[in-house]
Length: 287
Image 1 (tube, rainbow, N blue to C red):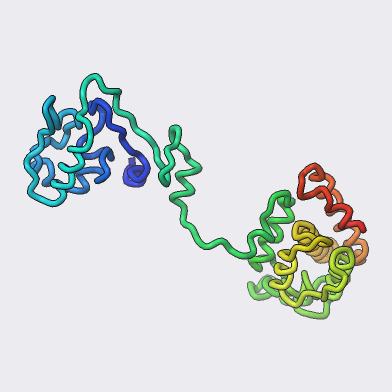
Image 2: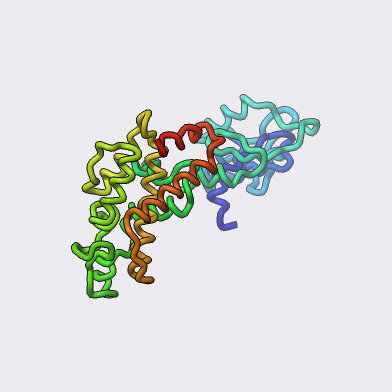
């Protein structure tokens, strides 16, 4: 009941015999619910009881409303002269759910939510994070990384959780997102191995924006889809290795981490090889 005012945007009445539709409160005319248009003085001004149905507001010869004295009443009278009078042999009244001029077959939660939800402009980075065929854990980690919400040592120190900010992988610079995942000595080796497979002339990224821009570039030798797969797998395994060093004291070489990335990318492509966009990605990755 608390959502009646919201539902009023979508619930429309189709006039039939007029026995179910409320004259004042249902949305059966282009003017909307008449009670909203005329206010509490409407029933008195038109001489139609507030509890009346549409069938109660007419007879066999015409509509039983008072002569119009306002612009609203005149607009209503003009509309009533363009429609057929409800009669007993007409089909019963019906109610329909209409969202953005689309008549739903019953109630559509998906379309209604899409029309009601707050909307903002689509971000230019969304296709680099969320795309068909992405691995959920890789995409989620990429999303958190893009928002700079990873608990790096630099952020932990700002919260007072730790006193050291040294990078877990190189111990030479403060552990920020961009340093850890892009141009740390350890990370740079991995990115060079990725570039060797896709874009040999590519330089190490200097910022997160450069990484996202690189994933959006599409070429015959390195399609954007393959770049996004490799980038997300690399970011995921770099963060995983950082956690292994920090929590488990497990140190492995960049070449070994890249071996895990390579195997991950191959498995992702193999699992989707029957899809049109994925058919030729393997040969471009292992060339």
